[in-house]
Image (cartoon, rainbow, N blue to C red; front, side, top):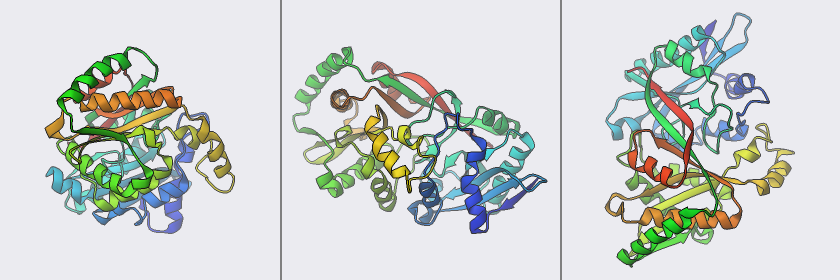
Length: 370
């Protein structure tokens, strides 16, 4: 077994396509679009304007690829969190401890050579993207922009000397006209009386640029104290927004403002993984027809962003956005919503998810060497 650095276009393509060797067709894993992964790993992704990377492949003595890993340094994470820690990401491996040890060691060695003494992950490629190894819920397909990994990855990480850093929760919530609507309605009426200048509205594609600026402002202010948080640059936010614009259901994106100042937002996306599962990573030529057919059959959402800036928390704005989101989801015919991800020690948000009749049905684990 040997580890090599990815240097050629052929090796990069092998790196990108290797997961198809790990996950059988009957696996809950959802193949990503190959074109998306290529772009995420390329310089077209503005994340790499402030980050650098090195990819590694593991081969057996027959010359077959048996594992991969990326070592990543995000300068914005290091400066914002004041934490000289690098990431490993895009880890995939056969069930072999020695191979895993060699891959983790290769990533660690490269980070050390760059002057970064600590490592955690997986981050694919950052804390604003897919994070963690799945640690519970292995029989359930992942939601949009969430990872799926085999259970044995936990053993590979721990046998390689990595330790749990954080657990991330995903909640499943039935979308149904139960007592939540009435309970939230009472809170909403009280909040509206206390905040007469509050405006809550759905996203408008006609004012996409203006709404995008509001979303950037809220995101970078509402989450700044969270573990692992790194502000998105304008280039990154515009890049992500451009990618998900076609996936948005405008009535499931909610913005709150007071006297014209953006103060909160809730973003739920239809779970397009229900569609991507049918495409096997290829959109062209026939995948596009499948995409157009199956997208109208999506019956689940992923609530991926919900936040209010510090000055206006616990004033009922969260309840107002939840209530409007729930009413819209009911009217549009959605059956389930995943709330993810939420830090295990974020007591307030976990309590809110439980109040919304959510139940933890998946967990993700971030590992580190410290």
